[in-house]
Amino acid sequence: MHKQLKLFLISNSFFTLAAGMFGPIYAIFVNQIGGDILAAGSAWAVFMIISGLGTLLMGKIQDKLKKEKPVILIGYALQSLGFLGYFFVSNVMQLFIVQILLGISLMIQLPVFNSFYTKYLEKNKLAFQWAAWEGMYFTITGIAALIGGFVVKIFNFKFLFLMMFGLSLIGLLIATQLKENEY
View 1 (tube, one colour):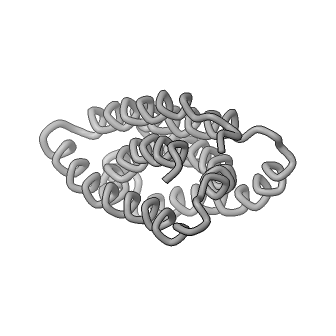
View 2 (cartoon, helix red, strand yellow):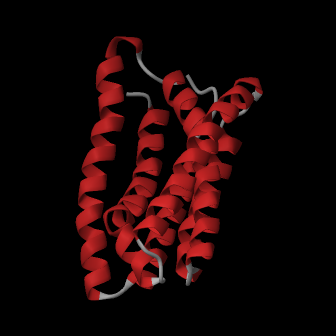
């Protein structure tokens, strides 16, 4: 596996860990800030729709851009800010704002993630190298779900959000070491 893929997977694993700690207990947090199941679903829908439609737009833009690393870093930085944003959320309207920010971060990240990752694939190991991404994602997300539950049970959501922010900053710092066009 190309060293850029390894570095990218390591960087992304910190973001996966951070996000995965919150996913399964998201609705509990929404309830704690005064929201109900409709608020939880609506805020998640906003995030997903912005991510989905924005990804289509960003894919067209990314095809025209010559550099990938700055876009990766911008997407990661916005995601880190979104994780920190959860720390300050005290009502459903603020949650919607954070979900919009996170949706924008994901719409920026997805096309560039795929193009950067694809660029460094070794042609005779395509299945394994994509499996490395998928396996990392699902395994770390599963571990993160357990960690997130324990953290909130022992501490609270605020502590979890600071952990998520810290982990994402580590991922962002690692991503600064990525090199473009290093075949």
